[in-house]
Image (cartoon, rainbow over all chains, first blue to last red; front, side, top):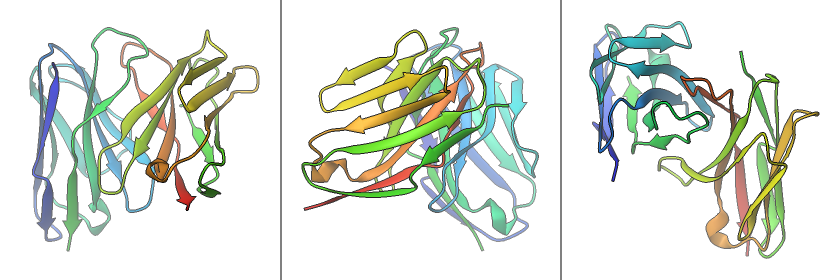
Amino acid sequence: SQTIHQWPATLVQPVGSPLSLECTVEGTSNPNLYWYRQAAGRGLQLLFYSVGIGQISSEVPQNLSASRPQDRQFILSSKKLLLSDSGFYLCAWSVPGSYNSPLHFGNGTRLTVT
Amino acid sequence: GENVEQHPSTLSVQEGDSAVIKCTYSDSASNYFPWYKQELGKRPQLIIDIRSNVGEKKDQRIAVTLNKTAKHFSLHITETQPEDSAVYFCAASTGSSASKIIFGSGTRLSIRP
């Protein structure tokens, strides 16, 4: 069966510091991968998605970036965090090449920028 | 791009009553509409989904209806129970190869005992 791992679970970082969140998927090949952000009490905002290694689509221009160095690894990064980057970051995957496939979320990373 | 609007933002119902959450979408090419439930501090989990070639789908106490002409879809929960308390998100996708799924803003459902 497929599993998704996301870490760390919580993170407190000062403004201006770098960020690296990692997500890996097991049990499937070439999954579609996604990063969503959820601000406190808000909805799910799509940040990035990827259909393959090195293929990243950005949905919201900001100081965040994503990379997919391996087939089942998705990384969210920032060179300098802003206060507004605080939130609950969720990685997700869906079945590759299958239209209308549901998302399967990781447990999320709660990021607090101080 | 796709825009999904969800109403109401909060909903309180008596245990045993029904709850209805409504969503509208903007992109007429959207053809996949999942619903997710998120309990406090946890990840969203799929509870039901519907595709554009179907007008209604049921799964025990949960049902979803879709009106493609009007571009809106709804979640119906009958005989609500305390464990139904959570935030519910609707979403829409065009089902392209990227399977980009756009979410509504969420509905916080509270079940009164």
